[in-house]
Length: 153
Image (cartoon, rainbow, N blue to C red; front, top):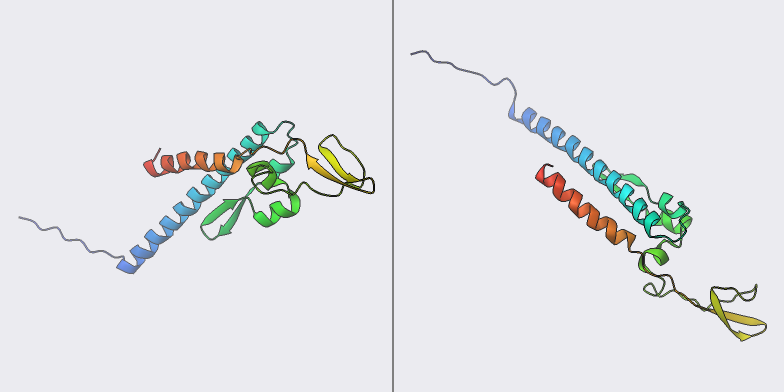
């Protein structure tokens, strides 16, 4: 009977480091891909639920790396500075407690009913902005995508 013997030339720590590196690369790839899918989804929902989309709000949502192995979309600071109406459209103006009672120095507009004295008019919205829920719809799309990634499809 012959005996076959083998020796492992790789130390256990090297195997652990190699496996960790492979897992980190895979985690980075998957999280970036999910961020790309979320970016596509939110832009699609914004454009498809808007009455007259210009693309400005959709373009304010983009993927960005938030850490070594994590990605995200919807930088709140950027949205507040560049598309400060994003909350109104997503959640609806009544849901966020939008204050429509504001001074309108240029007189009557079609969007508001004016009240007050001739020197100080305040507006009340005729039609508050309805909730478009594009963030919630994107989260639902991502839940499906994550399940597909987990199941290996």
